[in-house]
Every structure is written in structure tokens, then in C-alpha cells.
Amino acid sequence: MAPMPDEEIFPHATGAAEKTVAAHQEPCDLVYHGSWFCPFVQRGWIALQEKGIKYQWKEVNPYKKDKEYLAINPKGLVPALVHHGRALNESQVIVEYLEDVFPQHSLFPKDPFDKAIARLWMDHVSKKICPAFFRVILAQEKPKQKEAEEELLKAISTFVEAMDESGPYFFGSFFSLVDIMLTPWLLRQPLILKEYKDFEIPSSGSKVWDRWSKWLEAVKQRPSVIETTSEAEHYRQILERYANNTAQSEAARDTRAGKSFS
Image (cartoon, rainbow, N blue to C red):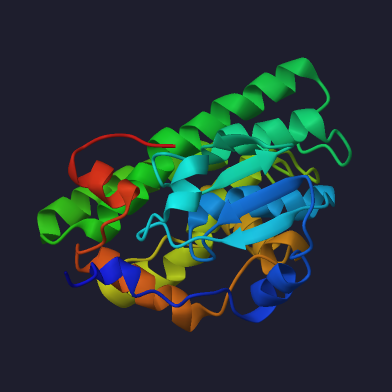
């Protein structure tokens, strides 16, 4: 049987991310199983780098689903975290677990109310912004793409209006899990929205989009983000399959089915 197209992906991280992988090959009690190209994986990866946690990286091709990985996560999805022999999956669950178990360099605000606000906006990213992003890039008909673009812009502007005005991050000078939840998608948007969909998220022209641009430039320069990002040409190979609606990822299938995901 011929492999599905998604199996034929570039096999490892490149650029700064490749150096990060090389620095985390020593066995230890915390193992992060991920795919270098996956935005869900990058959420947990950024958190690990921010918190300075000792971990081992293991590269996974989620489209081949070998028996060893299925024993860790029967769904075969990435990421998965194994800590002291016990496994977790789902990116938001993993980043919150890391926050609970490794309190150093906290990525949640100290104030309980602000922490609750952070969780609300993390939920907004997962349920409103990311699904709209996928709907834009998977759309094959102009009317459906236009509808998805409007949905995406509305979800982002709502997010931006809740940001601390001074910036640069969602909570002002404090880089948090709210920023981490969204960053991987917006790093990828210049590679696919303009190139394949002739669409750009505004970067100026109003208070909202000026603030958005300030946030985006700040997260792009964050060391943890740079350290977990591969070279653009290799992302393009993956993203092109979304643009022509042939991607077989769980997120792509859920988007086609009208489901939400996290």
C-alpha cells in the first residue's frame, strides 16, 4: 500500500530547532514526544524552553503511528508527555501540567483572578482563533474562504481588545501561556495565508491592528520561540497540503467535519 502523502514529511527539525533537539537527547524522567512541524507540539516545546526544564525530545511521525508511540498515546496524536513513566496528551493539558509541577519561571499570572482570565483567553484561542485559521487555509471556494477570513479577523480582534494596552504581550510585559497558545499559528500565517490564499491579517491601520503587530513582533523575537522554530521552506511542504485540502491531520479532518479541537 502506498503511504499517505503526509507520511512523506521532512524527518526532523532544522535551523535553531534542530540545535534545540540535539541539546535534549539525553535520557531523563521527562520525555516530550513531538513532531517538529506541529503547532500543537510547539506550544509545549516553548513552555519547556521558557521554564528551563530538563527534558528529552523524541521525534514522532504521527502519520505512521508505530506501536511504541501508540502504547503511549493510543490516538497516535502529538504531543505526548511522559513523566516518571506516566503519559499525558493534549497540548493545553501538557502546558498546564508543566506549570503545576515545575513552578519555576511561572507562565501563569500570580493573581487567581488573572489566572482565571488567562484560562478564558486560552480557551478563546483554541475554540475561536485556531479553528478559523484552519477554515481559511482549507477553504477551496472563494465565498467559504471569505466567510472564514471574517471569522478569523473577528476572533483575533476580540483577543487583541482584551490585551493589556502597554504590551507587548497579552498581560503587558509578562509572557504567559495565553501568548504560547496562539504563537505557533501566527508564525505560520505569513507562509500560507498570503502565498496560497492571497489574504493577510492587517498589521496597521487601526488601534487593534497596531497592537496586534506589536504582539506578533514581540513573540517572534522571544528566544523560546526562535529555539523551537524550523526553517520556513520545510513548513511550506506541510502547509501546502492544507492549502489544497489534502492534509490528513486530525485538525484538518475535524475542520472539514465542523468540529472544534484543542
